[in-house]
Image (cartoon, rainbow over all chains, first blue to last red; front, side, top):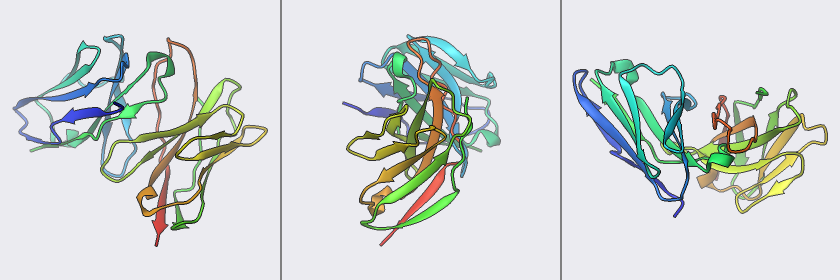
Length: 113
Length: 114
């Protein structure tokens, strides 16, 4: 199984809502990542988890809160987002020792109204 | 990290080889060349990577020049499904302590035409 799954596929939320994005992989990878991609732009790294511990936070606003409850799951909790946070949110995973060969999920298309 | 330069767009006829160039003239001795692609509305897909020898897998071939300052990704028989943005990324391939921070440039948009 070389698949990274993400739910939901699409999400529309208001600026006062709280929602969560979920990501799952069963490849035994111990590194997991969140990326943000705006339209017609390349993906930008947000967070890196290595062995379930947060290892990189790319100065992401606190309204985005990542969580890695176990080695297979990665969540991104969203609260008080702004319309400019509307984007495609991508999850990826890799073996911790080969962190540049990443497997990406299909993404969650987020719209903040 | 070494900077990469790619043409913004390329066309290729279906069934022909697609040759995507990448310049990385400031590459360091321990840095690998990685290629990813992103088909519209999907997540990026890892294609191949190499250090200095040419590499081939079921998806593509990677040719790296002897001085390692440039490389070419070759899709031997392009199909319409290969239409995508192709990203060339240069990173040092450390051990278990590496950060995994992939930095995507603007990439090359490859349009495969019938």
